[in-house]
Length: 419
Ligand SMILES: *[C@@H]1O[C@H](CO)[C@@H](O)[C@H](O)[C@H]1NC(C)=O
Ligand SMILES: *[C@@H]1O[C@H](CO)[C@@H](O)[C@H](O)[C@H]1NC(C)=O
Ligand SMILES: *[C@@H]1O[C@H](CO)[C@@H](O)[C@H](O)[C@H]1NC(C)=O
Ligand SMILES: *[C@@H]1O[C@H](CO)[C@@H](O)[C@H](O)[C@H]1NC(C)=O
Ligand SMILES: *[C@@H]1O[C@H](CO)[C@@H](O)[C@H](O)[C@H]1NC(C)=O
Image (tube, rainbow, N blue to C red; front, side, top):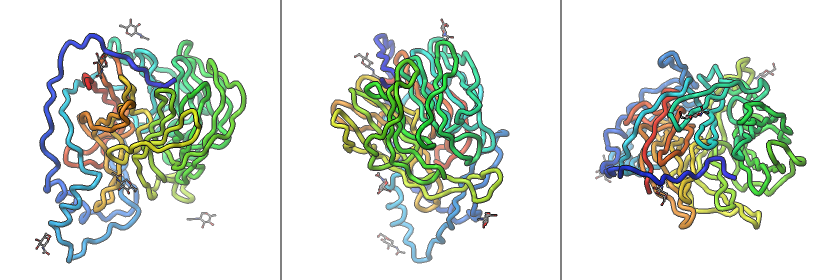
């Protein structure tokens, strides 16, 4: 069963006035990047305090190449505008801001069970991780509960899925910065709010794709022990009512591995969408496991497994996209994905966040862009209730003209969704 449920809205009262976004990002936007690239000199990941939250500035470790005097600016602008970091034109949606989550979160994880969105752990800042669950009630639009996670449970980069009552939390990173992973796994009984033990994953993984498919919990890819190396392994274990029925077994490895992907079961098929290869890793010998940037390659590929239990490729996302593991919902035979992070900017070498809402139609196997978020944001957590698409938390951009990662937020927004 998928971990986001399909709730049709039978009582849509208003039609949303859909205005088409008619302008693409202009030359001035690109010029701003060129300016930023020439003014940047730091060679390490560094942090700047924004509203008392420490936020990564994502200064690249690699040296930014100096632009040669021969560069033809006009040609550069044309090339840059067509690159994947540019916003894709999208219909305009009306957004409504709701009550913010009790804490801001980066790399938080969520599951929706009926009218409740359970939001797990994540970073408050790179030096502080949460160890609790916050619960949002879609019926009265209030954050209504908070309870702790087990001490040994990962705080970020975990695999997560629910069967509608039990929430399986698999492996992930324990602690702040770029600390090591744990293979320990746990199950939350959402009815009694108690935690159960679960067999550890055969090896620790960061942000593996995780789903329940045909009675088995599947855990796919992720990053290996050093946080950066790509894992291709695919394990599964039979589960029922929050308990393992056997032991982990090996399944067909995924052709492209890596962390931070959306993993969805729809129409009895297992889908793995987007993601990346490589991730920040701890500086050698750093006593606080300080994160330092490594090469990351993003992808928008879609892998599907059906009864043949072979991986097949499906049409890719309109953009390479990562950090979307809890940023999806299923509604009316479509997968909807909000935000994410895409290819580094070719000139500034900064991370570029994604603000589009993507729709994958499971009948026609086609992707489209159906709207835009109020800002670009990665590691947002999405839910769907009574005709509304909700998202909360993550790390947002620095403004409409600057898609670099900015503030870590707890904001919650919703919009009426109608295909
Ligand atoms: C830059 O390229 C444009 C278009 O190809 C061309 O018209 C222009 O003369 C070039 N400028 C320089 C300085 O090379
Ligand atoms: C959610 O809100 C509804 C409406 O106020 C209420 O009846 C229900 O008990 C709430 N659920 C939880 C778990 O708080
Ligand atoms: C890390 O520490 C080890 C042992 O003290 C040392 O051999 C190694 O050179 C250090 N590495 C770096 C990158 O400082
Ligand atoms: C996605 O990433 C791949 C590999 O880095 C690259 O070849 C491709 O141009 C990127 N963009 C899109 C839209 O696929
Ligand atoms: C899904 O289908 C139902 C029934 O046709 C419709 O009322 C609802 O608006 C649709 N949802 C979306 C997001 O289009």
